[in-house]
Length: 355
Ligand code: TXA
Ligand code: MG
Image 1 (cartoon, rainbow, N blue to C red):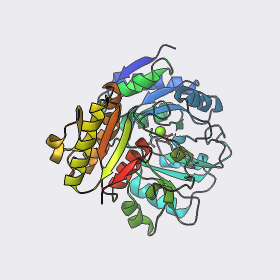
Image 2: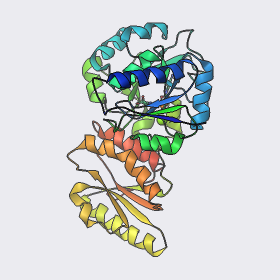
Image 3: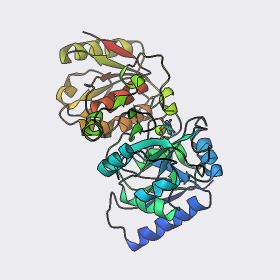
């Protein structure tokens, strides 16, 4: 398949007439059963018509994704949610008011019209109303309901730039819309609104603290906080190894001095053994590492920067053929919870505790 490319200005509120026309064309592709990758405020998505079972099947095939792993339906107006859910609890309306459009996905009971191909066979549906202006336009031109997982091959880090979408999806989908850098860099927070107590299934930019302010108490899926848990996560996608770089990645936790000493000792030894070594380091201590490739993930003071850089750094290690990687660890409150959740998955839960 010959993949078409479209460029639009980064996070532009106002699109030119030409860009509008291009998005209309992209919408036509989705309406007629094709697939289009597009920017959102979190990561790039791989979009198809959510109400067309054939489109969902194509999405699974293009990603190489197991078909029991459900897709998120993206909408561009709050009122459109009523067609795809069978019930909208009051608490869901509250958080929609507070956080939509934005990086929050709600799990709700599905309406008949939503095909089981889209929900991975479940009776529930994931719904998100993104804030990215071009994403909203595309959803509108596509008929209002786009099913979109992250636009990576299954198991790879979610794409934060169109060049990474191209790496994974060129020749596999109809079109890629390049809208530059995404803002957040980690996928949306997922909250399950089908149980009595709302429960976070995937941590993200909208934190437990933020949700708690609106809802009172909010649970969190234990498999997110307890990395050693053998329990099966409730979001099917969270059970798969994810975001994994091709090299071996380990996270090292301890005081800054301990972490630096440990990583240097191990990268020295690994290099002796013929490995190409890498470190994911914070700006404050960057200069102190010996590894072949030392990547700066940002300042410890700037968690948003760390979130934005994580996935592209994991892909850069692959490009540079690094085989042995160590990462500093991050505190797990606020946005740090989402950062550590993705990092732990990337490391296959390999963590060294030096305390
Ligand atoms: O930020 C995002 O959410 C991005 C952008 C493109 O919007 N999308 C995204 O989709 O991350 P995906 O498919 O990569 O991740 C969706 C996650 C998976 O872990 C899936 O198992 C879970 O949502 N999920 C979807 N529907 C569900 C449902 N009905 N019940 C529980 N989990 C569900
Ligand atoms: Mg994904």
